[in-house]
Picture 1 (tube, rainbow, N blue to C red):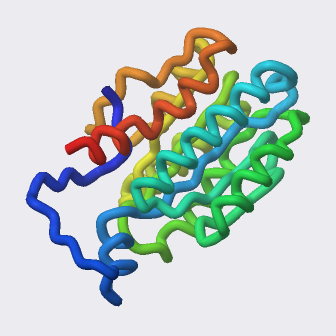
Picture 2: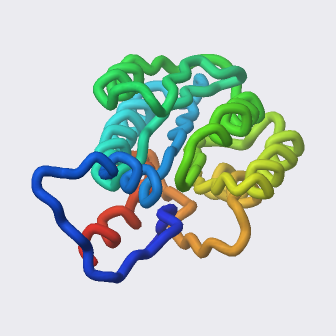
Length: 206
């Protein structure tokens, strides 16, 4: 089972009621910040985009429940929409629901944005990427992905079909097993995007 949550805490937890003044700091330390980057190029029209929005909502709910602050990047051949991680979850979801599919597929702009904004946030930092096709700027995207991984920003990917999955697999940070990078068909896009957060459920269940 894939997991983009880096840490695993198996010790007995401490509780305090009402929550103490340091609870937000503890949540930051054991949670993190994630950018959900969804391809909204022209090929995503129709069922694919509907599925991506549904899967994105499920992903955001899981991440929020695990104390991850969630940002959103809707990208095509440029960044079409950016919502920072400090935004309210309702605002992130609203932006996701307004996604429109158009133009080409250049991921480097979204990766560059992630590299610029995530280092300022505490805790675990993750870029989760979904795409449905070959990248028009694969070499540049790979260069930026390696830079992000070297900075301690983890990259998790999901691709629709073998072309997208193989292209994105080269961007994922090495050393993190993930058998779910490929989504077989459009009907599985929602589940595939949501699956980037499966580690959150496993962590809560410990």
